[in-house]
Length: 176
Image (cartoon, rainbow, N blue to C red):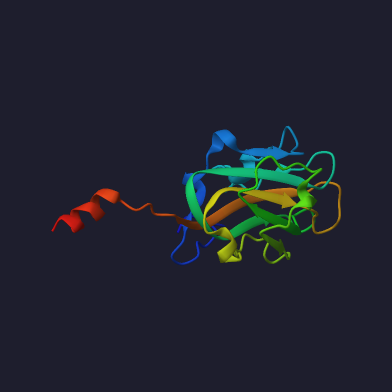
């Protein structure tokens, strides 16, 4: 294990960092000087001094596409006790969401983070809702202290890739 602050990866799952399509990642209402990269990119997310911060108000809307289909098992969000996220709504495979329409759709799951969970403890999601995930939208609705700025130190996603069936190996079995 690296540093003590490293998030424990749930058994049988992998950190999905390598499967994020960073060219398509978006974050609405992020502070220009404290962007999403600080919370999700390798190296940056391990540095507690770097945060993703909201800009105009406390809400953040994050879109994370994957470069292959994944099964999402859990999410770990690390944040400060005061400004860390509280209510987080997760949407599987919903593209082009904005603050104007985010409440029009039922979330795949909603998690309420406690100061304890904000230390980076993985929260297990409704697994059946996250079986064939091509993209994940994370709507941070409010924070722990109802302050104007939400700060996120780290977002880590855990799960597995959806194995595709190798048709060649199936054909060989039929030949024999």
